[in-house]
Structures are given as structure tokens and as C-alpha cells.
Amino acid sequence: MSIKRRDFLKIVGYGIAGSIISLGGGFIVGRGSEILAMIDKQGEKKGVKWAMAIDTRAFKSEEDFEAVIKACHQAHNVPNIPDKNREVKWIWVDTFERAFPTAETEFISEEVKRRKFLLLCNHCDNPPCVRVCPVQATFKREDGIVMQDMHRCIGCKFCMAACPYGSRNYNFYPPREYLASMNPEFPTRTLGVVEKCIFCYHRLDEGKMPYCVEASQGKMFFGNLNDPESEVRKVISENIVIVRKPELSTKPKVFYII
Amino acid sequence: MYNTGKVIVGIIVFIIFFTIPFWLNLGKVKALPKPELPKDETKCVEDTDYMRAYHMQLLHEWRTRKIRKMQVYYMNHEGKLYIMSLQRTCMKCHTSKEKFCDRCHQVVVTHPDCWRCHIAPEEVKK
Image 1 (tube, chains in turn orange, yellow):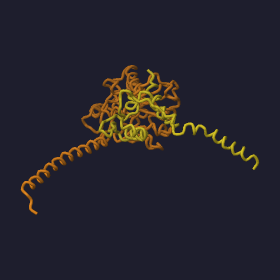
Image 2 (image 1 turned 180 degrees about the vertical axis):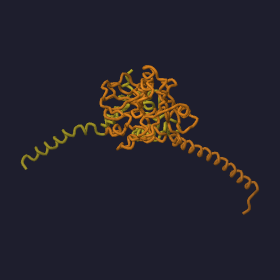
Image 3 (image 1 turned 180 degrees about the horizontal axis):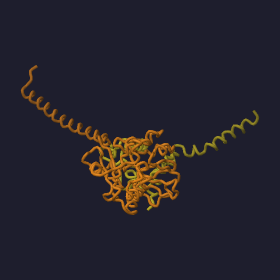
Image 4 (image 1 turned 90 degrees about the horizontal axis):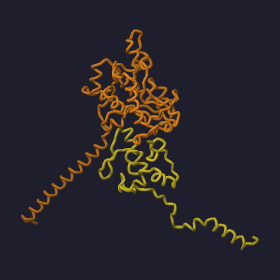
């Protein structure tokens, strides 16, 4: 059977039109899977390791500490419990000898000894609390934040015993009864779970700085420890910094500028 | 058997008397829960049928993704992005826990403990 020239051209035309349409369709579909992959990969932050540096020279008055603590505790609905043995705190203030018990020597400057230090969870690179948790309620994220899954915590307090910095607190009292005001954007905790600072992971994931860093007005620095250009790295390299209890090799990621 | 007629009638009356609620309500559903839907929003994150059947799985997945997989946004079937958060996304439209969540949960006798930690919109203290 022979084919007419006209029919042949028609067939070729259809072929070309079809391939253009399928090319466009394939491009759109390919783009769709790209978007899907983007959604799936939004959590993968390769090479990020968050760290904080606190300029202890800049914190002078009670108000300086107060502003930072208030910003954190209000935003995260941390209860204000009067019982000092069973209080709940995410960020707090203590003396040199209590913050750095092994760094204390007899002849250290009196001025440093008298300073107060802002303490919080150190988000250790080698966190002992994570190792002891029997239900994996506390774990280390890829970006180095030591996180708590409150849904999973059974309140066994192993992590409190493991933490050498006293960063963890158990809810001995129903936390809601000790809240003056609530931030509707963030949950509270419940009776019988352990809580601590979470490095404001929810803000970091959305590209914002932690509440304490914002409230400190330049006295605290935050950034990616793996990025040599980041603010923390610069501050750490330009100043003398110490960490809490380095001999335990937990590798804390909160640095204190002395 | 003595008094056969009376006994059988008695048994029938007894059965009818105790099954009256079933006969009266046959084919009708009366205690249907009526959750209050948001007025200015017509579409939920996924379609209504899906949400009705699988909202618990969705919330569970959001929790895992947000806390363990470091993700922030959820993309629905239409390609729209939502922040994965009970308090910041769900409860922005469903402005009342009592009028929405509780209405069904009470009928089906389910008591999830979400609200022991999460703050229901009506609980917010100023």
C-alpha cells in the first residue's frame, strides 16, 4: 500500500505536535516531583550545627538577665513555680563557682568570680541525656539540637540524672496552674514530663533567631558552627571562650565569652 | 407446661417492652454529632471525607515530621502549603475545641489527651 504525500505530512505533523505536548507535560510532571522532593527534603539541612555564644562581660545588671529569661519563659509557657527544689526553668542565672565548678582556681580574677552567668541546655554534641532515654523521647536532631518529644516522655527522670548541667526539670506540679499568661502559639507541658530548652527549633526551622538571642540585644550570638563566616564562629575565634565542664567530653555548644 | 398461653404472651410482652428503644428508633439516627464548622473557610487541609476518617493519622504524621524530621510545611493534594501545627493552623479556623473536637469525640467516647499540653483556643489566659 502506498501512502499519499498529504497523509505522510499529516502523520509527521501529528507526531511533532504530540511530542511537543508530551515534552511540556513531562516538564510539568517532572517539576511536580521536584516540588514533592523539595517538601520531603525541607528538613535536611546538611552541615548545619547550631551553637550559641554568650558575652558574659555585657550582662551587667539584673534587668539584662531578666529580659532574656522573661522572653523565653513567656514564649514557651514555662511555669513559675515558687518551690525552689521543684521549679521548672529553661534558662536561668547562677554564680561562677556553680556554673564552672572545675574552672575555678584560687587566683582567678575577682571580677570574673563575681560575674553572674546565663545558663541553659548546652545542646551537647555528645549528649548523655539522649543515651539514657529508654523511649527515645529525647534525641539529637541532624543539626545538633537536643530535642524533646513530649508526646513520648514517660517521666522516668533518667535524663535528669544523666545531665551534668542541671538543665532538665521534671513537672512535679501541674504547669498550667503556675502560668500567669499563656502564649497560644506554643503548647504547655503536662504533669509528669521532663522539659528543657529546645534552642527554639521551631523558630530556627522558620528562619528566625531564638527568643533569648533576640531579647539580649547583641549580648548573645547564634549561628552555624560549621560555617566559618557565621557570627558565632567569628565571636568564638576573636574572644576567649570557655564551656561548662569540658572534662566530661559532652562537647557543649553554648560558649561563654570571658 | 402450665398456663402456656399466659407465659408465651408474657414473654412476648417482656421482649417487646425491653426492645422498645430499638423499634422506636429503627432506621433513624438521632444522636448524630454536629460539630460547628468554620464560617469563613470552606476547605480544610484535605477534603472533608478524608479529614473525617483520617485526621488522627494526619496529626500523627505532622507530629513526627515536625519534631523528628525537621520539616515545617505540609503540602496537601492541591499543592497548597500549610504550617504543620495544631495550635497555629488547625485551631486558627476551628476556633473552638468544645464546639468542634469535643462534639464528635464525646459521642464516640474517645478522649485523646492532646489538650493536656496543647492550648485550646478557649483556654487562652490573657
